[in-house]
Amino acid sequence: MKKVGIILLVFTLLAGCSLIPQINEQGSKDPDQVNPSKDLALVLKPNEQAVEYKGKPVVQACDIITVDDLEKVGLSLEVPFFALDRVYFDGEGKGELETPRGHRPSMNTNECKYVVRGKDSVIVEVYEPSYTSQSQLDYEMEYNFDAIPDIEGVKAYAYNNEDIREYRLQHDSLTVDINFNFLDVDEKREKQLLPIVAKRLTQLEGNPTGPIRAEYESDLFSADFVNGCDYIKNEDFQNLFGEDAGPLVSEQISSSVRQLLDAKDTYYYIEHRCARGFERFSGEMKLLSIETESHVDAQSAAGTFKGMKEAETNPAIGNELQEINPIGDESYYSESEDGIWRIKFRQGRVIVGMSFVDTELNSTTEQKIERLTPIAQAVAERMKDL
Image 1 (cartoon, rainbow, N blue to C red):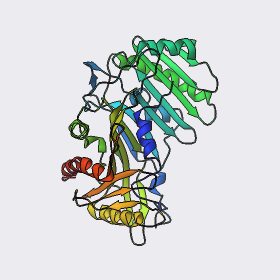
Image 2 (cartoon, rainbow, N blue to C red):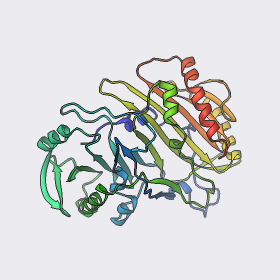
Image 3 (cartoon, rainbow, N blue to C red):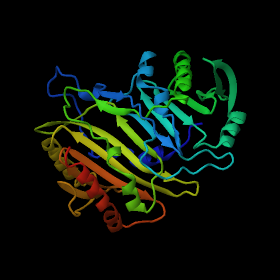
Image 4 (cartoon, rainbow, N blue to C red):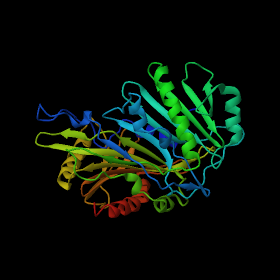
């Protein structure tokens, strides 16, 4: 069953709140040139180095179904969009997942969501003994799923509500759920993808691979993309909260190069979101989030940062801005009327927004700035050579 994990919670808090307020994204100045926002530039690279949890290599959800698999059956990622959402093991967070008791679903799930053009999404969830309650799976099997014929020698089940297009495949100790969250039922593509999943499941169970890496190929963006997950460490989480981050990291990956026009210039950039933390059954949640906006050069980033800050001072947007101790090349604190806040800074060609969630402590604005500033300064220092 699809569950609400930390990736949905943290990005729900940030929903609709791009680093740049009210982006005016249009076609290129050259009418004969394709708008880069409409072109898929994301390339996902395999990673052979598996990540271990509790001494065992884990199967990553995005390795069960790949973008290539989707393309083989005529599906493509949505653009422009955060077209890939995932929660995965990256080996950085040193904390342990809270084991569900009884029939309660896990609060943190190894999952992968592809936003598919014209279809909505395909969601994959992976369950292994090292982080899953067997009683939870047994309960769901008894009440939610009906057996269907095996697929490629793998046990298969379908959700017992025809309005929910979800399947469960099991092979030895590995369980995988696939949810076809399509706008319209597409049994043809379901039947094409399920054998691919079954084969991949048996391949990966004994030989897991590591989390895929995002790269971009576009003539309009010659610089390297900056993945924020690489710049927030377990050490940062410890310094902020006094304990380890969980082993799962949440990420949103854009499918395309974005374009921003102002009166004089055109800026090309790539957005990315990442969060480390944990959520417990008690309701406690601690998260450290980072949003990066990679530009081709520092001049482009500086122009965008200037326009971003000016836009936030517009009464129509109504954000509260506050000057803070220097971080990177330039920085400030921003908070919207609905309470969404960030420390924003620019380091060279990268614009960064950072925030945290701590349900155990209701911090004032001054306390938020005081707690997060040294973390943000450490991140800026790591980005100096970009």
